[in-house]
Length: 56
Figure 1: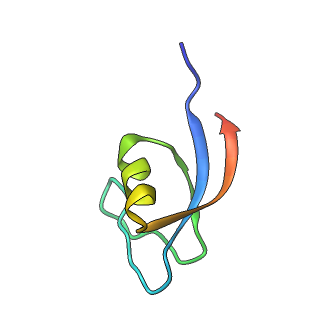
Figure 2 (figure 1 turned 180 degrees about the vertical axis):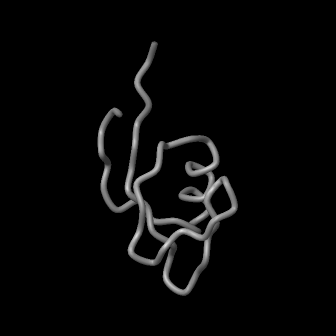
């Protein structure tokens, strides 16, 4: 089984982004498993990847 990559993300300046479960991502950022949802948000510029946490 392949380990899942994790990353710390925060909303882009002035933005508000929800997690997959509907909760709002805090401005300070949170650690998330890098799913297709978060990859899309980063690619769209809604989220900024702060730090890669490697494999979880």
